Length: 153
Image: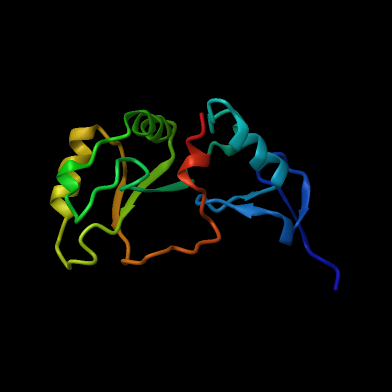
């Protein structure tokens, strides 16, 4: 069977469907471009002008990504990762649609919506939507980027 080809949404190079990586904002990206983005010292997504798209959605996990993890659902002890929050706010200002997603309260069946919104406001996080995901030990997702790679310095 002849593989189908598409193009990288960043460099427009032709790539085979089985060679591209998709990230949260539903764009095809070749391994070369992904490597360049992840190795970038400041990871400024506005650099490649083709990437700027007001329809792009970036979804950020909350605990362990934008703030510290806490034990036993003591979310009031979470410390914000201010440098990461600042970067998310830059992306928000550039026109990206920012979703914050969390499993807070999903194990305990406790509604953490208002507390989480208040905390995000206190930390100055700019976002469009807060989404509560299902509780799980692992999330297996073909569009995932590890926080350590996305926020690499």
